[in-house]
Image 1: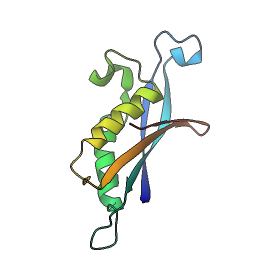
Image 2 (image 1 turned 180 degrees about the vertical axis):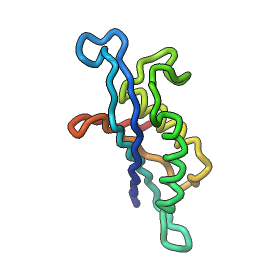
Image 3 (image 1 turned 90 degrees about the vertical axis):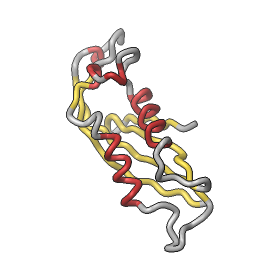
Image 4 (image 1 turned 120 degrees about the vertical axis):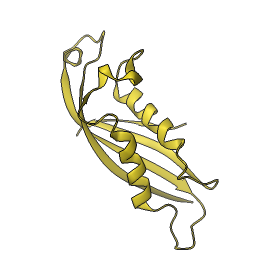
Amino acid sequence: MYEISVRAAFEAAHFIDGYDGKCSRLHGHNWIVEAVVRGDKLDSLGMLIDFKILKAELNKILDEFDHRFLNDLESFTTENPTAENIARKIFRKLAASEIFSESTKLHAVKVQETPHSCVTYYE
């Protein structure tokens, strides 16, 4: 079994509606997102999946969030843009991508909100 990952980043603002604390106020983060892929078969070049392809697909998804006020996005009309909800949405969009094969699957998405706080989502 092989496991590879790529990282990408986006910058965005949000607030957590109903939260009792500082996060209820508008603030921003430099979010770092890591996508982890697992599989057991390498292609003819000896790669599980091309880093370049995986990172491009992740960046395409992150473009929706980059330099935005997350609370205004259609994705968050019914729930807060918490790191947990962001990780789940990114995971599901990336997992639905056509870049994966039967033997190569998205394992997890990690969203880092600050240098000391992150969440990992997997199904």
